[in-house]
Each structure stands twice: as C-alpha cells, then as structure tokens.
Amino acid sequence: MTFTLDAVLAARRFEVSLSLEPGETVAVLGPNGAGKSTLLSVIAGLVRPDSGRAEVDGRVLFELGAGMHTWTAPHRRGTALLAQDPLLFPHLSVLENVAFGPRSAGVPRKEARDRARHWLAEVDAGELAGRRPGELSGGQAQRVAAARALAVDPDVLLLDEPLSALDIHAAPLLRRLLKRVLAGRRAVIVTHDVLDAYMLADRVIVLEEGRITEDGPTRDVLRRPRSRFAAGLAGLNLVPGTVTAGGLRSGDGLDFAGQHDDPLAPGQAGVAAFPPSAVSVFLDEAHGSPRNSFRVTVTDLEPHGDQIRVRAGELSADVTPAASADLGLAPGLEVYFVVKAAAVSIYPA
Amino acid sequence: MGRPRGNAYSGIPRWVVAVAAVGALLVLLPLAAMVARVNWPQFIPLVTSESSLTALGLSLRTATASTALCVLFGVPLALVLARGDFPGQRLLRAFVLLPLVLPPVVGGLALLYAFGRQGLLGRSLEIAGLQIAFSTTAVVLAQTFVALPFLVVSLEGALRSAGSRYEAVAATLGARPTTVLRRVTLPLVLPGLASGAVLSFARCLGEFGATLTFAGSLQGVTRTLPLEIYLQREADADAAVALSLLLVVVAVVVVGLSYRGPAPAGTGSRPARSAGGQGTA
Image (cartoon, rainbow over all chains, first blue to last red; front, top):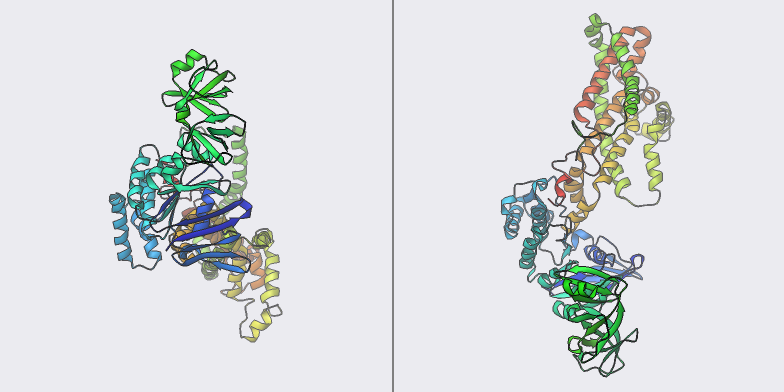
C-alpha cells in the first residue's frame, strides 16, 4: 500500500517520479522555481500534468497520456493541503473552519464539531474554537490550519512551506507540533529549511529545475550530499570530479587528497566534500604535511555565526575575524586554501 | 487598511478638489432645482393619488422581481466569466455588458423582436398560450435586460479580487464544487453580490426606454413610476415633479442604506472579518 507518482508537465519543465510508503514523511528541498509547489499542486489535483500516473493505496489519482484520461477531482483525492498562508475561511469561526472538511465529507454537524474540537486540542488551540480567523496571530492561524488539514484524515498530507510565514517565536512551536502530528503519517513537506527536513522528515528529495537530483534518508543526504544545493544546505564544500588513486581530480584539474569512504575505482565519477571550518587560509603556499593547497582569489567575505566565511568561487573557508584582519582579506586578494586530507570525504557521485 | 481619515496625509491637490466640487454640483444642482420647483402644499395629495400609488407599487414589485432574476442569472454568469477559461470568454463578457452602453430603447426593440407577437420566440410562446409583450412580465424582462450587467460587473470584480485560493483549499479538504460555491465562494463575495444587487435594483427602478418600447404604458400593468412621470409631465407638471422627488428619495434610500461602495482591493468590504487578519501578526 503505497503512494506513487510519475508526472510530466512540459510547460514547467517538470518531470518527477516519487513514491511514499505508508507513514513516511518526505521533505522536498530545492531552490526557488525548482517545481516544489508544482509537485504539491499535481498531487492535490490543482494542476493537471501532461502525462503520468499517480496512485494512492490502489486508488488511481490520475492516469494521463496517449489515450488515457483518468482524472480524480481534487475533492475526491484525500490529499489535504497546508500552505504557507493559513487561508482560514474568514467568514467561519475557528471551530467551523476545522469542521469544514468532515462536514464536506457528509459527517453530521455535531460529530464534525466534536472531531474539530479533538484536532484543535491536538494542536493546542482548543481555546481558540470560538474566534474568527481575523482575531488570530499568524502562529495561531497556522496551527488552526494544521488542525483543519488533519481533521479530514488525509491519505497524503501536503505541506507547502508551512513555517516560512511565521516569526522566529511561532515557528519552533509549530515545528514541534508538526513533528508530533506527522509521526506515522504519510506526508510531503516542501521546505527551504534544513531543520524542517531533519526534524520532520524520514527522507529528503532535492528538486532542481523540475527534476529530482537527490533522494535518500535525510541524514545520508545531508551527510554526503551529491548536489550542490544539498551541500549548501549541509554547509559543505562540494567538488565534483573523477576518482583517482589517492583522491579526486576536479573538473578544473585540481587534485584533492582525501578519504575514500567506499571502495572506489579510479576513473569513476565522484565528489569530494569538506566543511569550510576545515579549510585554513594562508597568504603564501604552505610547506609541509597538508597535501591540499589551492591558489584561489577571494570573491566575497560574509559573517557566518562568530566566524567570517571567505568565499572563493565555489569553495569557502571559515576563519576568525581576528585572522581575517591579520591576513588583510578582501575580495580580489589571492590566497591559498589549505585543507587536510583527513577532512576530505570522497564518495561516488 | 481603510481610508485615510482625520490627521493622515491625503495627497489630493487642491485643484482636484475644486474640479470634483464642480462635478458634484453637476449632479446636485438639477436635483436641487427640482426640489425648489415642488408644489409642497399639494405634495401629499399628488404622490398619494391612485395612479401614482399604482405606478409606485408596480415599480417596486417589478424591480424586486427583476433583481431576483438578475441574481439568479448574474451569479452564474459572473462565476463563469471570473473563474472559467474557455474560448469566447471575452466575447461573452462584451455581450453581457452590452446593455450598459446600449440605448434602452434599442434594448426594448430587441426584446420585442425576440418575445413580441411576431418575434423569434413570441410565436411559439403564443401557441403555448403565453403572451409576453405589453404585460407585467415584459416589464420585468426589460428591467432585467438593462440591470443584469450591473450585477455581473460588480460580482465579477469581487470574485477576481477574492481570488481562488480559498476555493482550492476547500477542494483539497474534500468539498464538492457545489459545496465550495455555497460555503466558501458566495460568503466571501457576499458584499460584492449585495452591492451588485442594490445597483441592479436601482437601475430597474429607473428603467424607462426599454419598458416603454417592449411593454408599453398600461396603467397598473406596465406603467411604472418613470413612465407615469413622463406621462404626467404633459398633463400636470406639479404631479411629475412630486413623483420625480419620490423616485429620487426611494433611490437614495435604497442605495444609501445598502450600497457601501467598492471595497479596498483584495479585502472584501468587511475588513474585520475578511482577509485583513491573515498576515503574520
């Protein structure tokens, strides 16, 4: 009993295959415009793909293509959507908002209200039942919207950046709450926050330009990213290239010495990953043990926690503000980035 | 949200205010001149004469019926125009709005050629025992014809500014399209629907040309208040002025009581209960 999706939408250059086990929560990460919201709209039935097929627990959501025109309307899909904007119906009370789904499914009024009260209590919003949406704060409204989506007991719960409109005080509370209610529930959560992926999801997919570029358990994807986007999220330098006997040769011809995590054959495609904190910055070429020393030009300096992040093209290094001042770092300066071989992980691309 | 009041900077140049004042006078001056011309001692007898009361009663009844028809047909039309996506949509909108710019007498002629005795449908209707032209039904049809665009324009605007995001969410919560319409769409655009209905009612009350052409001027059957005024103008100017004032008062009361003007963009006209509170408070 699974959820499977194959969909192609040529106008948005969108082509995605995805499957979810019961109770599995998948986080969808990716840059703006990568097709994350399109993915949710296709699952919810708000956007019709050119071709493809989707099925949940044996029920066909759509089957489109040559000669196939099966299409299940959004209200028959069992795919509740929780968006960035809570979109509570402004003319209904909080209780009636949450009871809306059950009422639409034909549940008698009283039972629907009981169910609504249950879900409001579940999201710690029981005391808001009598209020109008206009009288709620952003965090309260989003909690009520979560209760409203959960009250229909969806087969797949769709969450579109549910925390991104909240302020820094409201977001952690709702994140904890979502962690509680998403446990054991099949859900797809679009997010740009790596913390959401860590806390809420069992699995991560990275969507770039309408295609899935990474798919795997959250921990693995963030520990050993293969796409530059995931590496950025994980805060790692990522260098794609070709595996050599002692390391990896990048596309630019730089040789990286490092640790082969898996048995790797020279010549196969691989990536070298290392954290910016493992990179030291020198004005002169270092002599001695470190084997990875690269002459680079500083492109940007930016604050990063209590460190200064030194960017040089695709690579970055973290140095202390004092070190940065001592070195006289400034964009345009030529420096040497030095990283110990022990800090560089090399694995298949 | 809301209009700047009191201490807030309005940014309107003074000369604009002056021109606006002239524009307002253009409307108010003739009305004032008419009020000045009213024969006050005779006012009550004039407006309570049998023919006047008959005409007023007919006007109110037919305008109510026409407004109901405008809502019945205007709501689906506005929905199709605002939410639909089909070839010929712009053309349909243009035709629905045509009565706004058409001389009413032309509308009356068109109705006559459709529903009149010799008309397109009139012959079939007559065989079925229905005669529409020169009946109270014709008055209602004529008024609906000219007033329908007011409702459609007002409601389509409200639908567009409300957007369809609430409807999409309602659908993903399992609501059938009819349920979405009843429980989400219509309540959200209720202010727009109400002001559209009021505008339509006011337009029906004032309808003259199409009614005269298509329905004629039979006392108690098709002679509405504007027709009565036009008739009295020849015979008894005092009566015409008194009835005109009555019509102005009825119109002012209806519009003033229920038409609250266009809502600020995207909020509906109930800020406290509408999208106003959706931000990140």
